[in-house]
Amino acid sequence: MIDILKILAALAFGYFLGSLNTAVIVGKIYGKDISSHGSKSAGLTNTLRVLGKSAAALVLAGDVLKGVIACLIGLQLGVYAYSGEAKDCVSLLAAGAGAVMGHNWPVYFGFKGGKGALTAATVMFMVDWGMALISLGFFVMIVALTRYVSLGTISATLFFVAISFLPVFGNTFYFHMFASLMALMIIFKHRENIRRLLSGTENKLTF
Image (tube, rainbow, N blue to C red; front, side, top):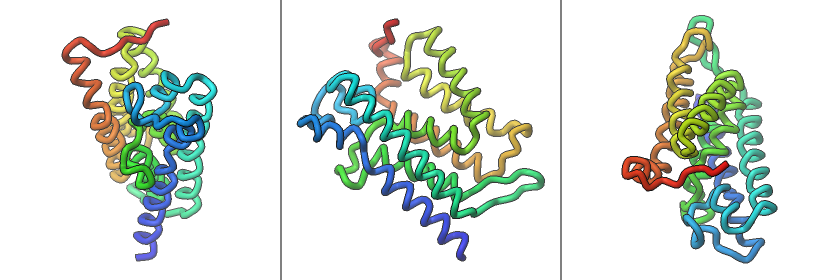
C-alpha cells in the first residue's frame, strides 16, 4: 500500500509542478495572455513568435526545470519495479508523466496548456538519457529531411516507444506504459498539426 501511495504522490507532485505553465506566467509578466495570441498554444514556440527571444529563454528554462525537479522528487521516493534483470523506478516514471500532464492541462490556468514536447523531452532524458539521445538524433534527422518540427516531434516520440521494447535497454512493463502514455499525450496535443500535415498546410522550418 505504501508503494502505491508513493506512486500516487509522485504523480500528483509532478502534475501540480507541471501545471506551473511557464509560458502563461511569462506572458503575464510581459502583459499578454499567450493563449490569446499567435497559435494560442501556451508553449515555447508560440512564446518565441509572440514575445520574442528573451521571453522564450525564460520559458525554455522553466519547462526544463520543472521536468527535472519532478523527476528528481520521483527518484527520491524510490519505488522500483523488477522483471528479471530489468529494473525501473516507477515513482520516477509517475512523476515525469505527471509533469507532462500538468504542462498540457494545467489546473491553475483552466487546463489550457502547451503541447508538452519540451517538458516531455526533459523527462525522457531524466528516465533514460541513452534512449532519449537516440530519439533526439531521430528527431533531428526527420526535421532535416522534411523541415516539419511537428512531424519530427511525433516521430521521435513514437520511436522512443518502439526502442523501449528492445531488450538491450532492460525496461519493465511499467516503462512501456510510461512511454506509450507520453506518446499518446504528444500525439493528442499535436492533432491540429497532424491535420495540417495531411492537408499539406503545415508550416515548414526555415533555416
